[in-house]
Amino acid sequence: MPQKRPMSPFMIGPYYRPQITSMMSIMHRATGVILALGSLALAWVLVSLSMGEQAFAATRSCLASPAGKIALAGFSLCLMYHLFNGIRHLFWDIGKGFDIPSVYRSGYSVISLALLSTAAIWWFAASTGGAP
Image 1 (cartoon, rainbow, N blue to C red):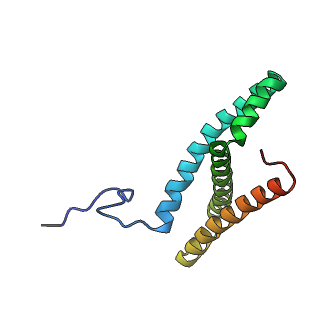
Image 2 (cartoon, rainbow, N blue to C red):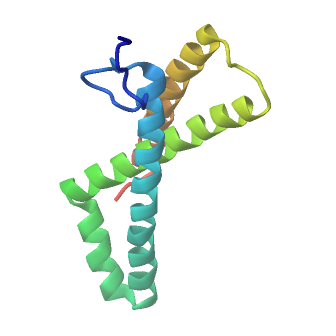
């Protein structure tokens, strides 16, 4: 009698061990959701800006709090990860980088670029006085 195998490769855990390819796919989807939710925060900032100086000052103080800074840092990391992984997917769409060594190399490159660019954004913002 043939052994029953799981039907879906997304059953990470008892059937499949996590690999960079599967985890990056999940993270790409998760960062997309976070960016969509973050667009609501951007709308909140724009609405408070349109409501006047006092409303925007309250929003700015909220974003300048430790929790606000953590949320902004997380949002910017999600943005950079989603950007670089999207570029990786564009290369895949034209048929480049499908061999396993290239897939792993580009995966680690996406992670490195996301972390480095997020750090650079925050360093630049803090050094120019632009960070809340």
